[in-house]
Amino acid sequence: MNRRDAIQLTAEEQRNFLDQTRTIVLSTLDRRGYPHSVAMWYVMEDGSCLMTTYAKSQKVRNIERNPKVGLLAESGTTYDTLKGVLIRGRAQLIHDVDACVQVLTRIHRKMLGAMPAGVEDALKQQARKRVIIKVVPERVSSWDHSKLAGGY
Image (cartoon, rainbow, N blue to C red; front, side, top):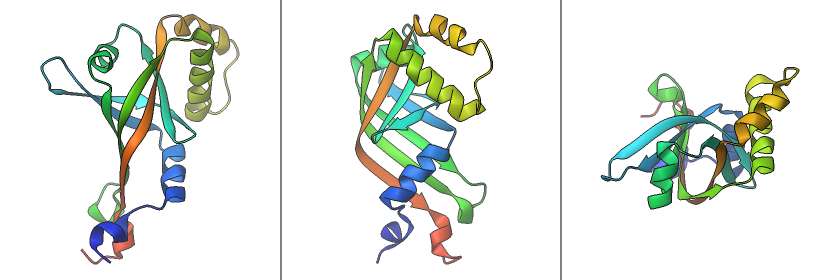
């Protein structure tokens, strides 16, 4: 077995990692072809990554021009603890206020646990100016260097 296969996360390990990781880096391409990478809060749904952003944001403009994106979630502070998932796929922009409120609510629950009183009204206000970015994976790479058991 080669090293790449040895450190790859199983499908279940990928799901668990992405469900637990709090931030993912979304990379789009700007109008000049340069990467535009930003950290995003997100949730996973049926293998796709969902996040929200302001409809007038740079990342939305970039996705409108070119829906090909990359997502990176990684953890670890030393080589032997590095673990991550790289997703390459196509982003879809969803303009639906009610669906956006649902995604915002799920993200806030993931990040904060219980929802503070009154936050639902604030989320509804936010959702009017936001869109959902849904990334459907086309290619996934993953790694868990702890699987090397010290054999680098």
